[in-house]
Length: 431
Ligand code: C2O
Ligand code: CU
Ligand code: CU
Image (cartoon, rainbow, N blue to C red; front, side, top):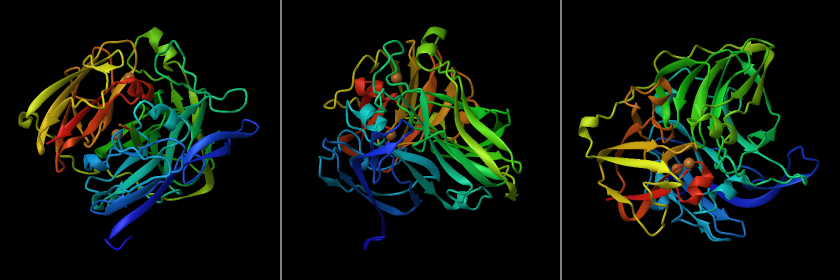
């Protein structure tokens, strides 16, 4: 905490090497270490300041994915940090408890910077969530699970070649969880909360347990759900998060797997975009005796529904051909201006055979409908990234509160990082 009462974090992007089971060191990038970065954590109402040092030999940036903050602090392509320079964004955390993350956002190079290892989790806390009987001991029964796929070349280095067929960018055949190959977790409590982050460049996952047990989905991108959703599967496209609570019995082992995700594309495209693949993600190994944990509460946090009748405007976005509405990202072009403190409906559609999702900076949105129907339970909480399925338009609603800046834009884009780099991204200002 500094003299102005701000919680201060230091992040240094740097190169390193790590033994990833390839018979030597794999060259990696990380924040403050060799791969990924520290979990940052702050409470609603707190002022935070991050000193971002670029220890790389090329410009990068750090974006706070899911964070509501002024555009100039957002860490997108307009807030690049030169090699050797320090960038110190600061803001006041004012949003519900959630599992957010941070990663580079240099235009045209995000895919590479993230692939080499630059990313980390940013957990937010608040009073309503702290009052709930949920597992919350970090590293004990509250576990970050950053899932990434990587491929290695014959020298044991990250292979960043893209498959020509799928059109999604880099797909790996080896899963890393928190930068570890073949991970397991020793569980000492009856219930464990997993904060799942799909930190992969292009791959979607459909998480579930190998023995078919269900779990409670308690949160999505921007916070806890109104009530837990009992389910056996949760699908996450790149950038999305889910918080789940799983119940364990003494001495048992169970594997969290990823099943072939329905990424919303046809059979052929699915195969080449990872849609047929299964992985073991993380083995949970329960101790012989487990500390008792209360049941997941039946009510979590109230979520005020944004009222579509209050929307100032409806915008339509068509994702196809690595463009949005036929236009590729141009850092010099602002696509539209949103009026501060208004609510907007965005209708997102796609027709091409490639998986896409849409991520919006600055806000957490609510899904109003999927193909004209009520959204499923996993899309009824706060979201900042959503998978878009061919011919099933999604309507979302968001309120653009607090911050305005006529000159500095926020981004909206497909979070398949290759698509984002290729220009499937646009810019809006809030005025
Ligand atoms: Cu996770 Cu614009 O990014
Ligand atoms: Cu973002
Ligand atoms: Cu895409």
